[in-house]
Amino acid sequence: GGYFSGDQGLLLRDGILSLCSDLSPDAVPLPLHERRDMEFLLIDVLNEVTRRHSDDVTCAAIICDPVYLNIVVEEREDLLSPNFITLESLREVRRAGCNVYVILLANGFQASRLLRFGDRILDTRAKFVLLHDFRLFHSELHYLWKRIVNVGVLVTRRVDIWRNGKFHYSRALFKDKTSNLNGETLNVVYLDHVPSVVALKDNATNKIGGVEIEILNTLSEKMNFKPKLYQPPNADLHKWGGKQPNGSFSGLLGEMVSGRADVALGNLQYNPYHLELTDLSIPYTSQCWTFVTPEALTDNSWKTLILPFNILYTYGMLLVISLPKLPTGWSIRLLTGWYWLYCILLVVSYRASMTAILANPAPRVTIDTLKELVDSKVICSGWGSETKAFFINSLDEIGQKIGERFETIDDPIEAANRVAQGTYAYYDNKDFLKYLSVKRKNAFFMNSVNNSTNTSTIVTNDSERNLHIMSDCMVHIPISIGFHKNSPLKPLADIYMRRVVEVGLAEKWLNDAMYPIRSLETNEEEIKALMNLKKLYGAFIALAIGYTLSFISLIGELFYWKYIVKRDPNFDKFTIDLYYTMKNKKQ
Image: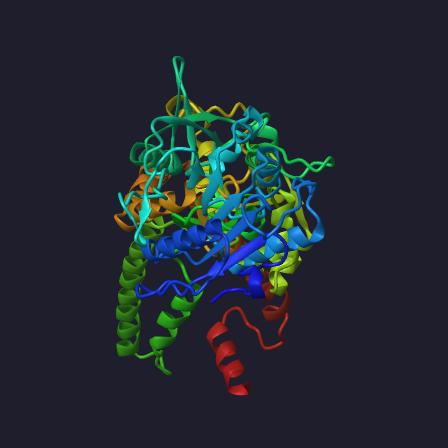
């Protein structure tokens, strides 16, 4: 099929020929009849390309001038700022999915301006056939040839011979050049964010590790390039970056948008915002994003010795033993026997409960669900205005309530300090929150072992709360590696990354990056005192409470004896038994 216009042949508006084929192995050459030999030759070449690349070629677009074909791009037209019809034609080619471009422009300056303008409109991953002109390789256009790599430049030398409807040498015209970059140096911008990128610093050198660094090393080995790692300016302040008043971007995204970096590492979320600015690889993992919240300061360790007592159990034991109506001898014996049995059961139950409580301390008061977070008074916080917009635009009511009181904060260490003060909850992925929590509790040890490059000060005191990571996940977000827009490296990199994920290397590297943090967290949980002087306070408190109740009961009994019993007219201290007998008869 195609676009026909009488004697003019194929025509897609002014200056663009869109030639679409069925792409089946048995495709028949299109019955196109033109009067010029150049047109016949071009049609034969395109038919041969569709046969040999039937699985790849979907559509071909031809941009030419009157020197080569009668489908005209006017010589006076400035293709760096083309007219509306030409611009719409280029967009139509992109929408049609054409992945073969044949540019036949005799004016090399005009062709260079077209490529500069079409950098983001043309599909730079497509196959290109160009006429050679030294003006296409000026230093100002070198960045184009990092993006357009599947290009065949038509030079005045013999590449192949077309004879009897086929090529004589059968050479590959569109060889994939990204499989071997011949040791080319690629600029890789990174951001220190556990577990994707972990920056380790010692006295001699700086070492960078993490999941994405291991993936980058694998890609560099398979695709034969040398990564040049660097951090964006003011990385601690801008981090991923955002849009500035002048329209540019700062931080890691600014390096990608400006074209200074070829690859970006830094726990990039696979979301529409990042996809608009960069090309993202296939996700290599999915992270749980949630909040780290403060624990309650309530400490019930002083009740350790009295926690095994349960008033309901005590009532149950007493009510099971039925007392006799008359105080006979056998009744007293039964009462005494059952009372001894009750004491034995009480001691056994107390010892069992005491052991269980000492082995498994009482649960801490924490925030574990989004509803509990909304009902609490803490302020939700996180990095970047995009995170705040994510909650505000949430379809769920709880997410919208979180967005209403969400505050942006740039420094995660400062956020952790505020969380410890009991006023904040910080939003990030679970692994990074675990790193923050362990780093606060093991500040000195983490700095000596991990030697983190972060110079923020961690302030701790006895009145601060522990950090607790919520068990509920707000959302599971895919994580990818970033490439600059229309990067030719992405298709092959996706293939290698898919293999890395399928064989489990990504999961293995994730466990390796988190192992030091998890080991420190385990050691901290194991070091705990089962009994201390503070917990022994419970025995004295229970004794004091018992003495107090006994003294009040004694005072009440003496008051009742002196002011009620002894003032009764029937009371006689010499015949007390007769007094009680008469009183029972009245009742």
